[in-house]
Image 1 (cartoon, rainbow, N blue to C red):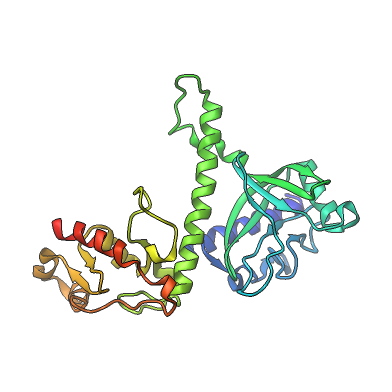
Image 2 (image 1 turned 90 degrees about the vertical axis):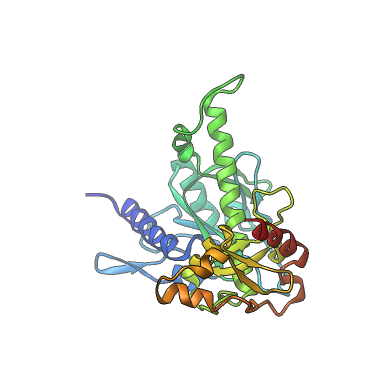
Length: 306
């Protein structure tokens, strides 16, 4: 039978897998904070009050670490950031090994325990990364380095050795890019959802699980930015239609449907989309977050030529 440490970690990973499926890498604290059943009791993944967390059922070591994006006006006490090594620097509790949380983190570092990193992407919203490993601790600077090094093998089917590079070096670069991309996407989505009050800008649909942050200028374009003004909250269906240029939005925030879409006759769902033609999207209250009219014009011109 598996020991309690392994069973706790496996149960926590299963819960996070389900949450990621439900919330698309932008998980609210309320969902993370729900207890997880195990045998005749339950345990928690993390704590709202502390960053380095060990469930009471875990004999030693830690289960998770967490960084937060503070609410406006509060001071951010964290200095965590992505690193060139393909992971993240994480701040220990001030006080070194005199603090119990730091001692438990060192145990997980020495054993190479798989842990969870809850990366704050907006106030009360997190991107869960797992399994992560602590691969360096600097007690003098009160920092540790967290990475997902066991995922490098997943790159073998897309990375081929060439030139002066070895497969391991290519895999490392792949993991660096993957980690940074996931954090970037989750931060962008969380900020766009917040600006649009978790509603679709076209339909008003208020179900976050069915909403996505659509880029006006695609993130693959050289002129794309990660600013909220380059994003619009859309349902998954309307996001796909926007990306396919079946729907366009002009600089006055007015919606236009492709002529082929307008002429197609196929049931109530399509008819409801047709009713959007000529309507204006809802825009954020904050002027800074409203869709860039310059970006909309550039994107709308592409829609007109399709």
